[in-house]
Length: 229
Image 1: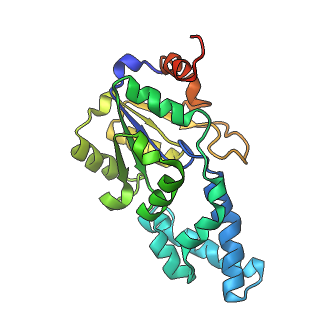
Image 2: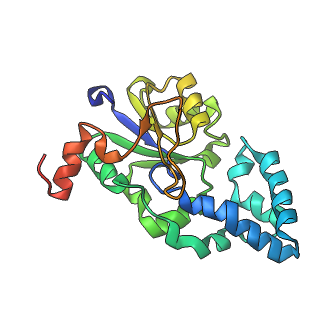
C-alpha cells in the first residue's frame, strides 16, 4: 500500500485515527444532548434541535472544535462533562505499537489535530499519547481547521517537512482533500474510526484497516510484540 522508502515524515490525526472515535461519538451524539436537556429543562427532541442548530452554524470552522465555544453556547462545562466518559478513551488497534515502530524507523511523527488543547490534554492524561510522538500541531494554534489548505501550509512552514515525502493518515475526508491540494504526497483514510459503528465504504482514499498491516512497519511491530516476522 505504501512505499516507505519515499516517506520521511508521518502526520497522524488523533481522534478516529490513533484513538477510537467511540468516545467522541458517544459524547456529542448522546451524553451532551442528555445533559443539555437536563440542564435547561428541555425534552429530548427540543434539546437535539437546538444543538443541531449549533452544529450547523459551526461546521467546517474552528468553532466546531472549540470546547470553550461549546461551553459558552450550551451553558455547560464541556471539559468537565467529558470526564464522565473517560473509560471510552482508547487507542485504535495497534496504534500505540505503530507509533513506537515509526519512531524506531527514524521517521518524524507528528499529531495533526483539530482538537482543542483542553481536549488534547484530557486524552493525553489518560493515554500518554503526546509522549509517543515528536510534535503535536493543533488547528487552534494555527487558527485554521485542517479542512483549510492553509493549515497545511502553516504546519509545513513551522516543521519544515517535504510534502512530497510526507504521509498523512486521517479519518476526515475533507482534511485529506485539503492536504492533497497542498501537495502532501501520501494519503491514507481510516476504514473504521469508531469501533461502535460500521466500517466505512466507498472512501475516496485508500483506507487503513489496521496499523499492524502497514509494511514495512509490520515487521517492526512484530519485533515489539515478540512475534516472528
